[in-house]
Length: 102
Image (cartoon, rainbow, N blue to C red; front, side, top):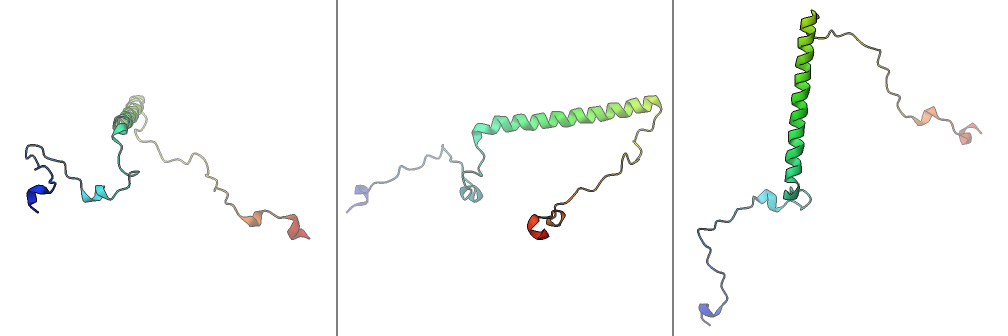
């Protein structure tokens, strides 16, 4: 049998380079890989978050400027607004059942 008789893969074209996949990406499950269909939505969410942060910073700076114009201290004082009540925790001891009473 001659080597020419066996099926061969076509020789790779050096002009066309293939993108190598990182070993960590090869072992990821399909659920963990980023879906390119949602890339535009991810960019939009990042942009909206950036705009929200920018608006919050501008609002804070405007409040400081207004406080400075009114002659008030720029930083709010640390006065407790109200005593914080501790959150109630769940316990079976809080409840009595009819079975325990008899």
